[in-house]
Image (cartoon, rainbow, N blue to C red; front, side, top):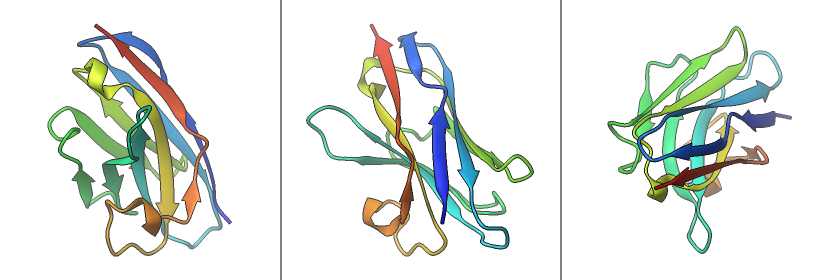
Length: 124
């Protein structure tokens, strides 16, 4: 079983930055891929970024590439999402998700475990 708890959301003005954290509680010895998704009101859940266990492989959705950076600290069992140059279009609930095996990293249906989400609101 895996538990994910997001934190770090909040309200920020356009052009500002936030760092989200995802605390991962999981059985030892299981190497999980962790991803960030977001969902804005009235829109489908959108892939933001993912990171492999060794952090050697990272992936970004089009909206995040060049502005967001994903990282992880396995000693702290935490995955981070540094978000810079935020715009009102980034306003959404951000979720972290995990799975031990992924065929399509951008597909939310591939992930077995989800956090409760953290709200990010960017004002113009």
